[in-house]
Image 1 (tube, one colour):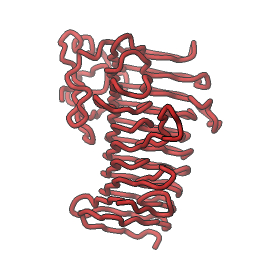
Image 2 (spheres, helix red, strand yellow):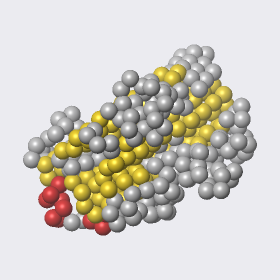
Image 3 (tube, helix red, strand yellow):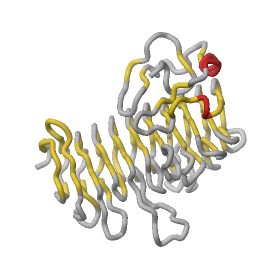
Image 4 (spheres, rainbow, N blue to C red):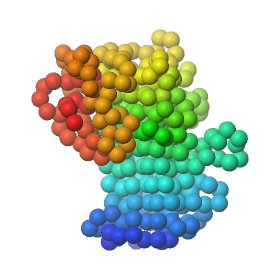
Length: 346
């Protein structure tokens, strides 16, 4: 019934797929995570769970190995108005998650890994599946989450009116083949704060974050990109960290750290629309282990660079927490602030 709390005991559930039509549900694992393995089964030809109700919360559930005949099988196919994902995981599905296309969508302390499949109908192997693909929702908010190893497609894709991502990791690792780390093809209001981005040597695309690639097709009333205290490291030679197409009104970048390989550029933005303060560019070799997905370390191993990273003032007083490891969050200790996302040594 609407408003129910559904409790699933921790453990493995094989071939147990479902469609949820009720609204205001809370579906949660108890005693640990409930791990759902598709084992070739699907709900309505769409995925492991199809959620049609509004304002549903999913807490402590894992989704594994979703496949469907059209190769678009999702761990969750969200068709309702709004969805909250907490402490959950999406692994090795054709799509980690699809939707929602309306309402507000929230992701907290969750992991999306190795989702996606190359499209055999296209000779270049271009992927149409992703770790996560949020539709034209009102707003998507992400915190303390880990997106890595998407197969050919993007690690994160959103068409929402507003996309806000904080204190999260987006990684290719040493062998990942993803395209963009973050793709917001329809623009809207996008805020990236306190995130760590790693572009790997085998990535399908050299751009880390791409904004407005499809010419802002939804016609959102505001189209702005704000980047504050992010760390970008690319071990893929060349490319661009942040690319914004002509429909963007403004790109505001503050206290970001860019570390490239072989001439990686920080920005490709229309003339006159970029405002940048307090950012710093260096090389990827000055970082400890930014491509280690299981135990990433974005702290510099170069004392000179670390001294250059110290900020004399706090450009964003509301930025008071960082993420020293994926899916963790802690208060920033002391008054010293650094360029980039990690504000104190991990």
